[in-house]
Each structure stands twice: as C-alpha cells, then as structure tokens.
Length: 451
Image (cartoon, rainbow, N blue to C red):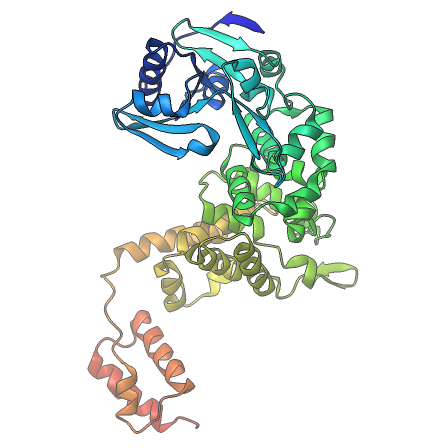
C-alpha cells in the first residue's frame, strides 16, 4: 500500500461537497470512508468528474441509520444511495465477493473492514485508487498511480480471473481505453480477446450501454478499432466487423475500405448524439451484402435500403427504443439522396428540411463526405436552402384532402396518395396558391386520370 499527498485542490462542485459531507458523517460515526473509482482517477488526470462514489467500512444498515434519506437500491451488494442537499451519492460497504456463476454478479458478498480487500476485487488499477478527503491523501493498493502516469489500462490481479468474474469487463476495458486514450496492458488485452465469446452471455441492454458510451466518448473510432483487433466486434456486432476489407472505388473513397471509412466518420463527429453516432456507425452496413464489380470497380447499388433494414434488426437486437430505431434507420435509408440535392425541385428539398429527422441526416451527410472525397458542395447548398426556408411564410395545411377526391366520384385507393402528393408539391412550388385553384386543378387531373 502506498499513501501519497493529493496534488491540488478538491473541487467544490455540488457533487464533491455532497460526497465530502457523506464521508465526514461516516468518519464522525467511527467508520472509514474514502472517495473511490472514476472520480479519483479523473481528479488525478486533471478532470472534474460529474459524480463521486464513497466506499466505507460501515455496513448498509449503519449507513441507512446515519442519513435521513438513504435509498437501498443495491443493498444486496452493500450499496446505498445517500441524498445530501439534493445530490445522490453512491455509498458502498467494503466487501469481498465469492463466485460469479452468471459471469456478471457475485453469488455471495462478504463485508469487511479492510479497504485493501475491497479494492482488490475491482476491475482496473486506475479505478482502484482511494482518496481520503479529510487527510487529502491518495491510497494506492494496486499500482494505479504508476499506470495513470504511464497511460496504461491494466486489470487488478489476474486478467483471466477478472474477466471470468464479470464478462462485461471485457467491454469496459475497451471503453476506458478509448475514453482515457490509454494503451492496454498486453496481458489484459490477450485475456479480453480470449474471453470475447463470453459476451454472448451478457444481456443485450448492457452490451448496448457500453457500446453507446464508446460512441459518445472522446475517441469512438479508437474504441471500435480495439474491438475489431481483439475479435470482440465479430462477436457482438458481426455486421460491422464484416465491413473490414470490403474494397471501395478509389476515386470516391481514397481513404480505404468500408470499415476505415466508417471509423473516419466517428473520428470527425463533433456533435455526438446517440442517433447520429449509431447512424454513422451503421450507415454503410449494407455495403458488404451489395458489393458487385464492373470492370474491376466495386459498386454498392441499393446498399442504403439494405443497410436500413439491417440496422433495424441490429438495433432491435440491442434493445434500442423504437423511436430511436426509426430515426436511425431513416437517416441510413436517406443518406444517399443528398448527392442529388442540386437537381431537386423546391417542393422536395422543402419536404426534406421540414422533416424532424433532417438535422441528423444532414450531419450524417457532412461526415460521410469528409470521410471520403471531402467535397461539401451539396452540404453548403442545403445550408443556403435552410436559410431560404427559414424566411418563407409558416407552412399552411394542404389545400386538398381525400374527401375532395371522393366527392368527384373516385373510390379510396393508391391513386389518392399520388394525386395528393402531386397537389402538395405544386402548392410548395407556388403553382397552386389557393384551395379554389387546387380544386380546379383536381377536377382537370381526375378527368385525365388513367384508371
């Protein structure tokens, strides 16, 4: 065990002030109490974390008795959420764990007064540092300080054991490596690669949560490149792994294969939302299944339609909300239409801009261009049209409805949609300026209708 002075000041954010009050109350009651985990790691890296966890020798019942608002959300594992000044603080009792028959949760929890035993059952050395806020000292029982200085992510103890206890740690290894920009200890990397198949035993929601954290983190491409290199990607997202080595036409894609192109989209994304990042990751997922060659040049006709269907299946498998799936699959299905916006009639580009999904689709187009040929002419054109659209009068309701067509003697059917679509396009183009004019057009249109 190494004890060293904490370099710098502890932030006076609401989260830290609440955690300090919790730790002080526990110590005043005769218990040990430390800050632990990501908060300590991030402070030592010069970052201010959003939340702070406390670990203590106090048993769960003692914690509940000590605080007015204590919520036993994870009481079975010695975890109590204490609310101080409206801020939730997770407080965990020192514990050792026994047996992991499901590869996720311990079968038995044994409480202890020894912080060393508690720390050594955690995942990675940089997450196993303790900070005593009263003494302002850092307690290192696992070599985490040396790994922080070296920028290395390493499991605490034997990596095979750590990943066998909790298979999700395989993905957490990749997430923390990409989040922190750290290299992975070779032994930990090899153990993660060897255990990759065990991720099939983990619930899809947990897989998705880790993947989404990688996508929204500072280095998403690096995270997915690690997943691919270790053989993890082909286990949890084989459709993305299948992009590797899929050749593209060099005149449009000098950057390389479909996987390389996709990783560039992730690298260039500045406005990172779940919808955009999943769209970027999956936008070309249909290319491996549509690749054909003509005169030695690869083509991917219809990849956007196949990709949208594949993405719907992948995202449903990962248990994303249906509204999010609809947003992402629409962006994928439409991502090639921006190539022809210069030739679009006004009605069509007005419809595109009015679509609630337009911001995601336009940003996906920008990333797609930057990640290959770098031409942004159509993107800039759509920005100009957005300004033009913003100056137009507020949209009005369509001039015509299906009842108007029925009144002329037609029965409801597929032709209704075609006629109403034509009428709406003419209204948006400014050729039909009133309902009366639209009704005159409709009567003429029905007279010449080929049924």
